[in-house]
Length: 364
Image (cartoon, rainbow, N blue to C red):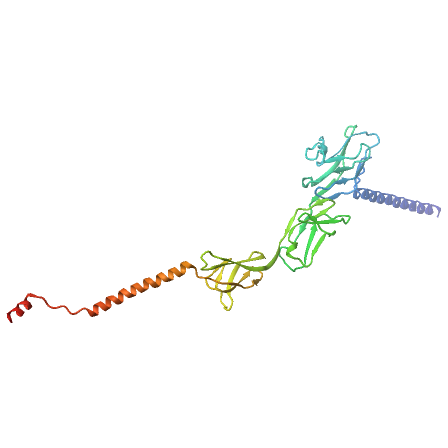
């Protein structure tokens, strides 16, 4: 019985030991997994931790990539830098600070102990890339690069406006960016360079009028978007007729004008008292006295002007031409009458042939 009890106790102890080993292994795997997802890859004292794996920045803004790193205790860091290239065996990637595209705009705020923070003073569209922190120690093979790197996306502010806007509509302009901003900023709106009162990402024009047309842009943290134009369409307004008497006075030139967007497609002229148009076009020459008005029409609606009364006077030349015409007609008519009268009064002509002459002589 004693031997059996000893065997049983031994088996129980072995099971407990195996369970303890299994738990230790699980804890180790879990710890390594947590270290991996947090951005720290620990390997014999080597490690780089990026506080954020990705950034989305507005073009022209400043970006700070915070970072920490560790090196083995028997290693002394000789060089610490950021690069856009991966480390390969036997090669040293180029330092970002040596690149002419980044020189003067990028600053390494870290040290050669644990801090590896990098700052972009102004971000450009070309800066969109993946960046890696790398450090080199004084020991052979002492080179390490942070796995995964940091993704930098660069975007711009844009104002979104409706394609077709008609006066009287409810219109909303939106300041947009592909970045998901962590803190809701204060927006600033401008029309034709003048600041507006709205401080959110949307500008409401309700209802919109033709005075709202212009160039709009938005700004965040002092960074402005490109300007976009808001085109407000409206039917003809302030349709009016002006007149100009010609020097001869035989006609009056009428001109129709209006304010419309899009511009007036056609002008139609009417004389009061009549239902049919008497002319078309921007100008009309009235040959008769009376009251005239025009109708202006664009792609939306039409509008009628007030009537203008004009008096067409005959000029001296016109009267002269009329008198000359009557005189010439009288002369032609008189000549024709005289000719007919003469033809009727003229006697028949006698036959003066030799035969007749002889006959008359012999009778004597």
